[in-house]
Length: 286
Image (tube, one colour):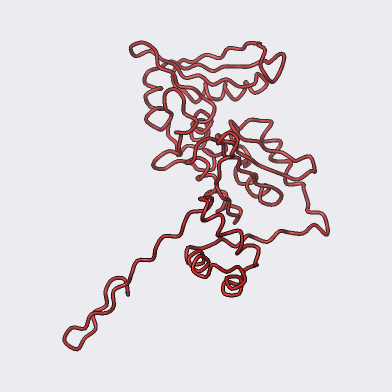
């Protein structure tokens, strides 16, 4: 399991999001990954990548989402394989909030494609706009996708849990989705075939004439927050910060109610010290 190899990085990302590592008595245990039976070819690729015996079984059952659901399950029992996966960051038992990107070198876009294939969506909205989304309970995974996608698309995303169930729902649309899809789902990559097809189809979308491009939001800085709280006046803050009065009215409410982090107090700086007619500059002034 060399995570610098694209296929291994993809498989590990997929297993982190949609696999389950269980312990049994003694040294017994197993890794399982259950997906829709239509995607069984992906599990066969996992079998080829794994130098240990594993099996694929299929079953039909009733679920909350469908009267009849056909699924395929890949099972791997090797202790050596399970130990390696656990060392790389696949925990035993419940893991949705604790998984995180691997430490050290790994193929980043392939890893993220595995996570999105397992717990994300790719396609077009009801209005025909391209989108890529990820639903995750892990702060580390959500933050890493925002960081990586920011480098690819130039767009920042705020990471905030859904108030109803505490889940992160991260969404990229239109040109941002096109750029991210083109980067993650490149020709010849290992992926769910239906999501690769959906990702390829996003490139055909063209922004309709007259559709406005929303400008990037201007992020609040700690210095601006301090000015805002010091003035305590919407109109005065709007003039000094060159922001709208509405934003200067909403921001203090968010700061006081914990919906935005309070600005840290500025550390006092030490003045230059005079020594023998020379000025010695303290490290904070260099």
